[in-house]
Length: 179
Image (cartoon, rainbow, N blue to C red; front, side, top):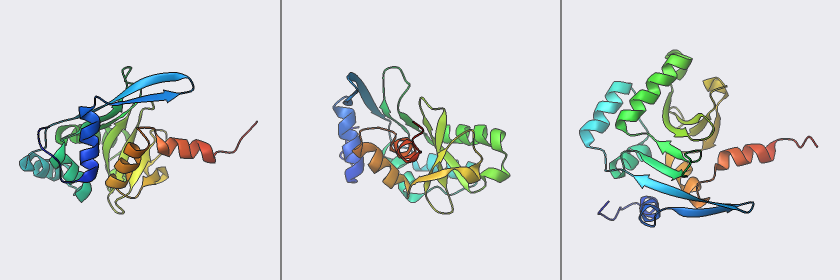
């Protein structure tokens, strides 16, 4: 990307891509998490996608698409870690896959916008509240937990914590210790 984004959060993500990612060390092991951004979405593609979905997507997510039409965030070499944020094309595919699994009526107020690598789950917008939800495949949509107040809130937390799955860490920290 050859331009400086106006949004400070987008600028931070772009810098991570330019640096080639970030090193991550946990429990004596180290890994490298890469950030891959794509060219901005065209306005016509954004409008066409929302029309095809029959849903209006959150404004902060649309701003992200105008910056990068999808992204691979904090992907490691094995592909078992990271989040793939959908492009204007991929979001249609994700929506179709989830409709086949849950049915259209159950997803009326939701849109799947990202895949979480390594867990088989996905991230979802609650279009009524604007919240980002942890879409666990083993649960029904009404059981999905909010993990961020908005897309930008989720993205900022994800960047600040270096690509760790903060929503899962919080869930495990809150679980009772059965030792």
